[in-house]
Image 1 (cartoon, one colour):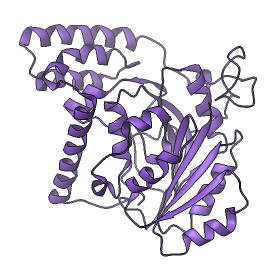
Image 2 (image 1 turned 90 degrees about the horizontal axis):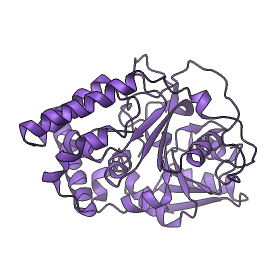
Image 3 (image 1 turned 180 degrees about the horizontal axis):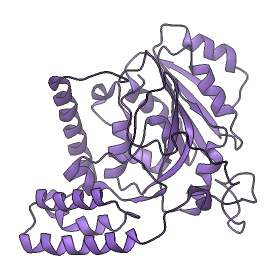
Image 4 (image 1 turned 120 degrees about the vertical axis):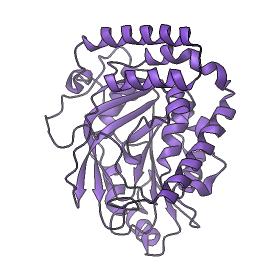
Length: 351
């Protein structure tokens, strides 16, 4: 399997070079690095072409400004790798990102969407986040339909198999997602039957700075409503694209819940509420509560997944394409307490 990197940038001349270099400095090289400049006026495109003109794996593309989703649309048809990693131009990859993520994809061929943790850099905020441990997040199509559950992390923490991405893109309402286009990736992947996994390692340096579109900003009621309506249209689109019969989906809630490794009590309660929203008969709801409670009780007694145990030494130079006869995994990473999980989604998106 070959790994591709898709970088989106708009007026980030201060940061984009560092982002590209972090992609080039991977211990397991990317097969290709595609940089899409979204109509920058600060000299970003020219600076990129000067610095990386001699890099055969780097392709620099310029286009008119149309927003973050338009960058994904522009770059997606050019991807030739089997797995694509997304990177905002103001963020930075750790050098062993591809190595560690590649081990997960190789060990778990059923997983086609992977999120990793991050650490904040720049104007770091003192924000306490919910713990998000290493675990199989399973399927989440029904959670998207009935609860708008956002199962992921910021753009730069996301990767997915290319065949899944091609089920998601193109999305017709491009103007809806000039920013926050990771909503399209996260919800689209859930509704297109993405099997998600989270790796609790801070493999991305997530930059907080004055040009962030969402950091430290408050949104009024009208802005929140507009976003909710855009999200409603997005989910309706993928329901139609996938051909789901929504009235019958509620009967499948226990099956989806059982795909989640070590579900939390919060998730159990959430799925119980979804059962009510889905308007299944009362006797069916009671049966669903019982089935989901049994899964929760069984899983709560299981040991937690240690990310260091998940990723074990590998005997190949490339965990994405190694011989199956070679024991899977990678070198054991150093322990760190710095924002290991990435937790819940920060309020910031790059253009």
